[in-house]
Amino acid sequence: MAVGGPVMTVPELEAFLEREFPQIYLHGRIWHVEALGPGTARMRMDYHESQLRPGGTISGPAMMTLADLAMYVVILGAIGPVGLAVTTNLNINFLRKPEPGPLFAETRLLKLGKRLAVGEVTLMGQGHDDPVAHVTATYSIPPR
Image (cartoon, rainbow, N blue to C red; front, side, top):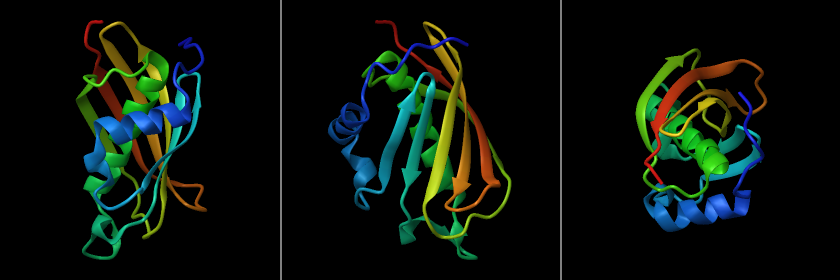
């Protein structure tokens, strides 16, 4: 899939998230857009104790939030600030237990159409080569 370069910068995307979705910063600035490329994005979720589940690992809902946010970021990076782009499907495969610590989302658009965007996200723990989860997601893009 050929996607041009990002139409938003990392600072523009982070400012958009702060303005439009301040609730994601309930536990502080734990969400960070680290990089944007043509149809790609890298995000980091800093560790916060609210993300733990019994057994001392990062919870599934925390990983799903990171994956969903990373998909939103890669789409906005490609199409611009469209606040009403929404998730229509998210499928996650949990591969191993992530230790408490930062998680990274490597995101890639597979298809970017006028009304739908499909992508995949690989979640990794800091300093680990093996993914902790693999995600596919579809977003609905509202008409301009």
